[in-house]
Image 1: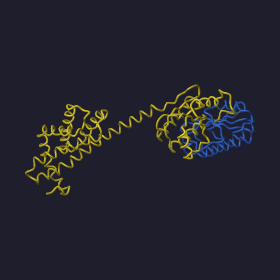
Image 2: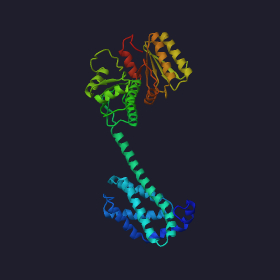
Image 3: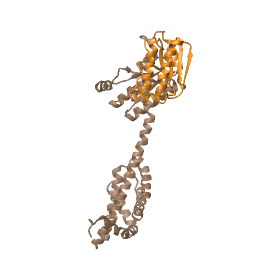
Length: 293
Length: 124
């Protein structure tokens, strides 16, 4: 029988061969573990961790690995991989390191199988048929767990940044300032709109000054969203003044053909506040104004 | 006369408070009723309070605009108050506009705007 044998035929042997494989790996635990650590160190992986830490983690992963081969259930390993990822991601361990380490273990174990069964090519093929699918499954499980954990961390950070960076400030009775800083994407723009309209209602705002000095670039979706926000604010009875359009953004808006006829724009925040006070009737009006932008 | 709209007369103003979403027929009835009362009470302005509306669709918007134009022809301005944040967002997303209607945050604000404008306003 060769390694290219049909999968179901290989499956027949899996049941009888896996216990033998597991027993072998348990038997040679110490040697193989040390070999694995040596390969990890040689490859320059996990530099942020001390040798003792590496050895401790490696032992747990090794035992989990053998358990998966024995039981076929990846849940324990999956949970451990998540937990491990949670601990090592903040220390700067990269995806390629994690994948490299798991693949190294796969190599170390495969190599030991070659050594043990080198007298019997037929048996070696059978045992590899049993070993390879399980080993691949383990590698995928660990890799996916790590990436999922990373994505979870990134999502949490994005949410934190979003919450931090969108304050609605009240500068005086019924006058709000919304300073927008950083990147504006469609989701954040939508969130800004909701926050602003909610604040208009709760603080009975008459004028809102939206300052976009801190926005580096803008695209059509976001530009339209700002226009919609101004419109929605107007429907609620508040006038919006946009300030701090950089020359680059102003040019982008013109190039994109955004309809700015409804927008009240002023050069800088100071001018915006003066305009707001005029709209609120706190300053002598330049022309006739009934307070509607 | 729709049952779910309370129409009060306060000074020169008619205040129509809608208690919930109205059917198309009720909206039309409200429009006709208000247009009629403007003449009867010699009202100078109509305030329509839509705080209770969960949605303002194109038909409601068109009816409100028609009401404003009708009332204007009979010498009264119209101010819509109480559009909720969600409703405002939905309206701009579906490109439903109330122009040339004047909108205000609440009743208080509408009264302030109306008190501040001379009798023949240039809009509304």
